[in-house]
Amino acid sequence: MTARKGYRRLVCFGAAALAILLAGGATGCSDRNDQVDSLSATYGLPSTRVDLEAENWVLVPAENSNGITGDTPVTLAVDGEQVSGSGPCNAYHGDLDLEGDSVEITNLASTLRACGDPVMKAEGKYFAALEAVDQIDVSDDRLVLANDQGVRLVFRPADATGD
Image 1 (cartoon, rainbow, N blue to C red):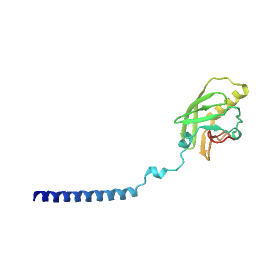
Image 2: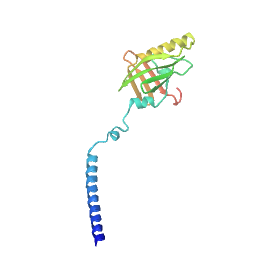
Image 3: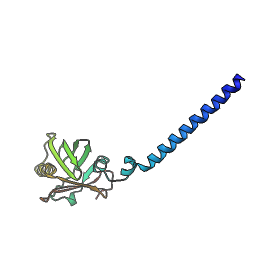
Image 4: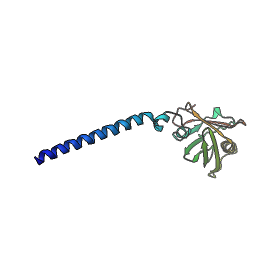
């Protein structure tokens, strides 16, 4: 008789526990459906920083405002708050501040390799343009850095086909 009484208690306890779980689970599910999951709500929306850091960028000479040309590809890469790459002559790095579609590139430093006069002039123009930009747009497989005074630097992903 005691075994039967224990069995009934176990069944009653199990049924009560199941009822509590089902009631709590149903409430949890209905509450969950009423809330917006921030990750799913933002999935697929553009993120300038993510798009910017996802690529190594190469300058498109024909689409620049200041005629930066040369035999060496001019590159740009972003990692967190840092920008780096290769200018027409020297490697460089600097600080990046990005907020929405506003950008500021500061504290540029480069290696001290000497190149011919035209290349050094192109490099000076490039570094000055980088420090002058204040707008950024990453779309359609293009990175555009610009300002309202006519500076425009256009880059394409490094792994994209050439111009």
